[in-house]
Structure formats: C-alpha cells, structure tokens
Amino acid sequence: MEYVYEMPADMLEKNHACGEVKRFEYDTKTYEEGSDRSLRKGAWVYLPHGYDQGRQYDVLYLLHGGGVNEDWWFKTFPDTVTILDNMVAKKVCKPCIIVAPTYYRGEDVDRNAEYITEHFCHELRRDLIPAVESAFSSYACGDVSEENLVRTREHRAFAGLSLGSMTTYRAAFYRNYDLFSWYGPFSGCCGPWGVRDKEVERIGETLAEMEKKGLKLDYLFCCNGDKDIAYEEHKEIMDKAVQACPQLVKGKNYDFFTIPGGVHDMKAWQLHLYHALQIFFAE
Image (cartoon, rainbow, N blue to C red; front, top):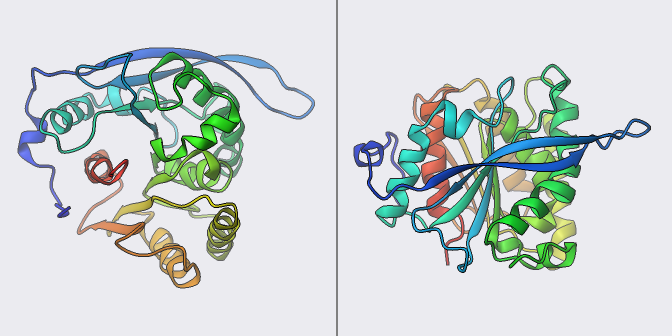
C-alpha cells in the first residue's frame, strides 16, 4: 500500500452502493466496586453494502475523542460513511462491520481521562463485544463465549482518535489483547499528563506476555500528523517501543503513519481510518 496525504477525491463522491448505519443498544454495568449498577447504552453500527447475515464479517470497534459521543464518526461526520461505501465498492478494503460506541456513561464526560481509558476494558470485554457479535454476523458465528472470542481475535480490530487512541492502548491493547490482533491508535498514547516511559514498559510487557501465550500481533498501525498536539508524545513512545520490543517489526506488523502538516482534526482521522482499513484483516 502506498500512503497518501490527502483523501482521494473519489472516496468523497456519493456512491449508489450504500452501506447501512444502524442504531444498536445493549446492556452493560458501571463495574464500580461497591456501586455497580446496570446501564442501557447505544452505539452505531456500519454494515457494508450487501451485508448478508449468512456471511462472516471482520469487526472494527472504532472510538471517538474526548467530550463527544458515539455519534461522532457516522452522524456528526456522515462523510465517513461515504468514504467507507467507496472503499468497499472500489475494493480498497474488505467489507467489514464497524462499531462506533462510547466509553462515556452520561456522568463520565468530565471524569479523569486516565480512569476512562482504562475502565472501558470491562464493558468492552463483558458486554459490548458479546452483544454486537451475537446480533451481527462475525467470525464468532454467534458463539460469544470468551474461549471463542479469543479463538477469533484475528477477525477483530480496535481503533480510536485522541482520547479514543489512548483507550486503544489501555482498554484494548493492554487489557484485552487476547480479543484483538489489529490496532489503530490515531493521535496519542498517554496524553499530556501521562508517563511516557511507563507506556513503553506496558507495551513491552504486553507483547512479551502474549507472545508466550502464542497470541501474535497482526498489526499495530499508529497514526498522527506532525503538527498534531499529540504527535510528540506518541512518536517518542513508539520510537522507544520499537527499540525495546523485538515483537514490533516495522513494515511487517507495525508502522507509524505521519501526515506532514497534519493536525488534531477529523480530516486527519478519516485519512488514518482510510489507511488502517487497507491494512486490517489483510490475508
């Protein structure tokens, strides 16, 4: 794949082969010690044109950034759907299901980012994935037991922008590595108040531990613009991680895509998604 630094014009043209964006609701919990309570939450699910319940699809879980909600990718920016429709129609990527949830639970909009990015791991594993892959046709084939979700991890990806990028590391990579083998952190790893060397250590510990369990990394596709507020910390962390982790091999299962002049905005994040979907679920 050749990287581009502007979205190709034909990806933004209206396409008659349209996918469907469906509202999806599921039950979860707060997973708070001493105050655990039930919640009903919503997500948006993109189904590619020609979606067939009798066929198996890879699934990408795709997060928004801080202070917004699950509407961001598909409703606030509906041109994301146009890009996806064109990618599928022109065979730029494989048809896949894309789930846009939220880590927020109403009262959490102003909660500390460190807490949110870590704590979402429980809801993700216990409720969101089982609910989605019971309702839609994934490679889990309706069997959402933990054993089967681990067995089908190569058909599951996780990506997110900004605070969602931090969540990609903390809730998916560090805490649920056995359920995903493709990752797309778009704009940041630890944020302005994180400890960079700690993140490098966590990346290394996760890769080493999971390698011993026979769980390989298919691809960690990091993205950022070099004028993005999150670029410096993200690039420093990953440069150190590549040096420290023999499991990360640039061009084989890892890359850091940089947009020259790219900033912390949706134009960059859509371009990151455009490239990630050409890498995720590749044969």
